[in-house]
Image (cartoon, rainbow, N blue to C red; front, side):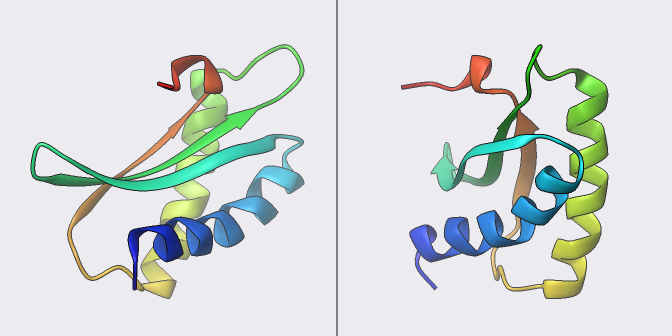
Length: 87
């Protein structure tokens, strides 16, 4: 599975969680940086995202990823706001 396909499937898994909680899924990515893989989702809502919002989505999505188990390599999942996105 390509990095892009992994990120797209991740978006499919995250979207129901963000929708259910009134968040907008801005972007997902699966990237390798300094030898480590990162699976990231950037979320937003009116008024901004809090750390508690990120924790909520992270915990819910982590359980889904454990069930799906579609990524072969070890990775770190990060849920963040678009304010932290690099262009």
